[in-house]
Length: 286
View 1 (cartoon, rainbow, N blue to C red):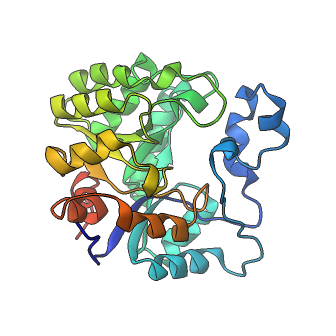
View 2 (view 1 turned 45 degrees about the vertical axis):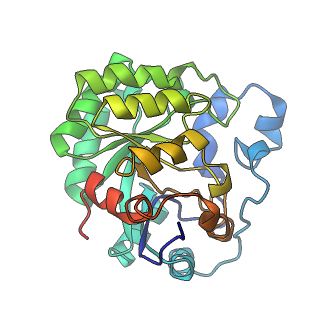
């Protein structure tokens, strides 16, 4: 059950800068409580006790690569943006891009996804249904052109599911909404992000039902990985669960990899969890 020493693929990482507040501008219109609007550095700050403080670096992409080297991370997925583009251009063997989609933009967003795929080779489309303004539930028809585009481009759709950390309504991210999407788009590789809590038992049931449904561990310190997910990986879901961190948005790599050896995965689970499942689902070169 020991964690093996193999090159890791991290499916959620960011490239910081002197000011990361722009990461959260999109959600400010939805925040109604004063603490979230005026005091938090990030919208779910109340959930994290060791948010990394990373100011004063001379070269942020190089700094992130050094941190990856310290913890055996071979490659990481980063969200499309100016700093991420710089990182991918300088270190193409270490980073690959995803793009956060907004279905409220209609066909303009479909065209943008296709253009980014052609120009920058994005490997996934990501989504935060509860963080959109207006919000768009997972099974809303506004998403359907984007789902179809992911099928056409043969890239996964990675979606926040469960109760969101930021203090915004949870209804758009109920896990039950995924059922209809997986039914209508059997070729879409749908990856749950950010926990699926408190509906992890339902998430497991749906992963058993739908071959195209997966789970990543983003935004959770390993000691808090849901027990339902760990049990599923150890039994019938070793090919369904993938590692994703949350550095530097909410967790340090020190915290993640200090906790990681304590996760009670069986021996056969670790290679898929840390690397092989990501290679397959995101169609990365091994």
